[in-house]
Length: 431
Length: 164
Figure 1 (cartoon, chains in turn cyan, red):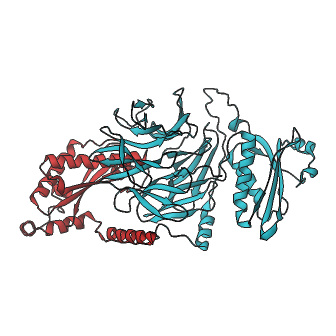
Figure 2 (figure 1 turned 45 degrees about the vertical axis):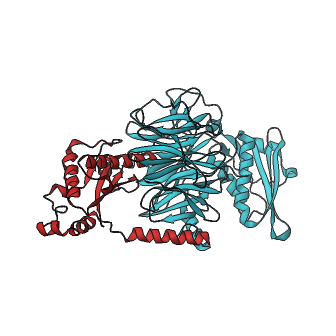
Figure 3 (figure 1 turned 30 degrees about the vertical axis):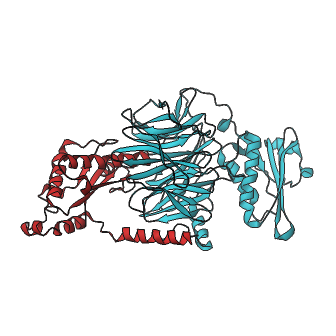
C-alpha cells in the first residue's frame, strides 16, 4: 500500500503511462434530426487545417499538436503532402488553398543555450495569406509535450475564439479490485500519476481554482471524510470528518472556502468550511437530502441536488442565504449539477427512462438537452473553457471516461487496459 | 516532519481498520459468546441459526427509496429485541445503494437507509448508544454486475454485529 504523498518512481510512471490506452472516437451523429436544428459553428463546421511536421522535430512536438487538434473535433486535418515549409519565406499560399487548408501550422525546433531548445511556430491564414499567431518558446526537452499542448491551445483560441484546454489536467479515480487511486493526468490521458493510493473507496475529486490542490472524499477511516491534498508535495489535511458522512467537496471560486455535505441522523445538508477545515457554518438545512453543491463563477450562488420536493432535483440558492429555487422539472431524478464556467448554464445527470445521461440546461431559457446516450453515465464535469464535458460511463462492462461537446456532436472515450476509471474532474486553465 | 507524522498516523489508522474482523458472522459470534448466559442456553447461536429470523441481516429497498418495507419489520424488531436483551451487543447499520445515478446522492441516500433502520430499532426500545450508522453509498457493492439483479442486492442496509 502506498501512502498519500509518496511519489512514484520513474520506471513505474513510464509503465503506467504506457498502460494507458487512449481510445478516441470522434463521431458526428445526426443529432436532433427530428428538430432539424441548424448548428452554427462548432462540430458542424470543422476548420480545415494542416500541421506541417516541424523541422528537426525528434521530440514529436508537431505530432502532439496535430493529435490535439484532430481529437478535439473542431478541425479537419489536411495532409500536408510533400510540401514541408518550416519558415514563412518557404510558404506558397496558393498550394495550401489547393489542398483545401484554411490554416497552416509551421515551425521547427532548434538548439538554444544551456542545452535547451527553441520551439518556434507560426499559424498562417491560407486565404488572407497572413500570420495569425507566432511564438517561440525556450524549453528543455522534457517540456516538449507541454509546449506542444500550449501551441495547440494558441491555435484553438485563434481559430475558434474559445480558450484551448490541451494543456490542462484531469483527475479521476482508478479502481482495481479493492484498490483505489486518485490519479492526475494530462488532458490527453498522458503522464498519469497516482497522488492518493488506498485500499478504500475514493470519490468526488475537486480541483482548487489555482489547480494546485485537490479535495476528495476517502473512506479510509471506515466512513466518508473530506481531505485536501497538495498535488506537488503530497501533503494533505482533513477538511471535514464530523459524525456521519462528509462528502461532495466544492471549492468557492476564490479557493478560500469549501462547501461540503454533512450526512447524519437521516439528513444531508450543505455546510461551508474554510479551506483549512476551520470555521464550519451551515448554509442550507432542510429535512431530507441536500448535496452536491456547485458554486456560481461569481461565488454568490450555489446549485445543488435536493429531494425536498419528493424526488432528487436541482435547486439554486444564494450562498448568503435566501430564496431557494427549483431548476429542474422533467423526470424524477436530476442530480450532480455543475455550473458552466461562464455561469450561463449548468450540466447535470438525468434519469431518462432506464438510462442515466448527461444533460445541459440554460439558466435564461430553462431549456435542457440530453447530450449523452450511455446506459449508466455519471459524474459530469465541465472543461474549463465550457466547450466540453468529461463524464464517467460503463462501456464493455467496465468503468470508462468519455467526453462530449456541449452541442452533443463530438464524442471521445478514455479507457485503461485494466481496472475501472470513474469520478472525473477537469482541472482549471493554467497559464 | 508534519507530513511524516500525518502519514504515520494514517498508516496506523489503516492498520487498525484492517485488523478488524470483516465477516458479520464472526462479529456476531463473538458478540454472542461474550454474553455467557446467552450462549450456554442456546446450542446454536441464534444469529447464525438459519431457522431463526435473526440470521437475516439485510433490509432491501426500491431504487431511490429509503422506506423500510413491511416485510422487513419483523426481522428488524427481532434484532432490536436481541440487542436489547444482550447487554454487550452493539450493532452497526451499514447503508448501501446501487451504482446508478449520483455517487454523492447515493452516499446521502445510504445514510438515510441506515438511519431509517436505526429509527425502527430505537422505536422498538434499543438505546441509540448501542446503534451506529455508516453509509457506503454505491462504493461497496455486494454484487458487481451492471444489471437489475445486482442492483437489487446492492440497495440494502446490513445489520452488522460489532465485537466488543
